[in-house]
Length: 111
Length: 117
Image 1: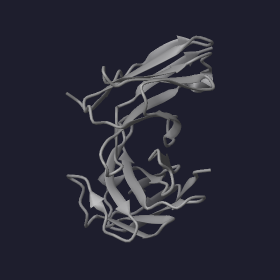
Image 2: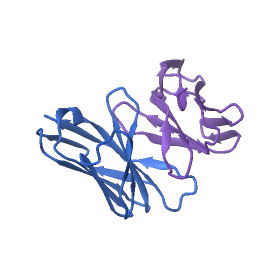
Image 3: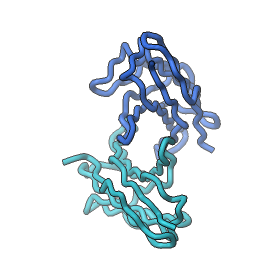
């Protein structure tokens, strides 16, 4: 079982819709969870992090964490074509500060 | 805040030469920086963890004598690709973690695209 798993996509949604991106992780000791967005040819940029069970909202983005199910998701409301990118889920565990990344989900928002 | 820069943004070099890439945290101090490599359409691959004032920790399979890392200050880490070969051509990205950030968030630099001819 891979440490961090994401559906590679592509996930295609129409403009204005809600995009739902999912991520599961294998290590119950994982502490913090991050969502990064990576445009083609660019480096990752942080969208948000979450470390407590429940929802965390930041503008159009909502991260959801369920540690019992080892599941973290990212919802993007009112999706825009500019949201088209690869979304990376990353998990932090241990004291060495290393992140374990999923392979990313390619999101396409169609005008 | 939390801006990380890299220099150069792209470099082309001849096979056998060495290339140095700089990673700087511009508005925070970073005791820990990370170096990643990414090939086209593939995920990020962690190469090494760079700690200020100590030796870098390399991931399994990464040649430490080929990829020299120096983290001489709280705002600068460098990666030197020695005796570069065409297979080293890749997108090299650094990230940094702030000393004072309790979330342990990593902020990424813009990356350096290396092409070895």
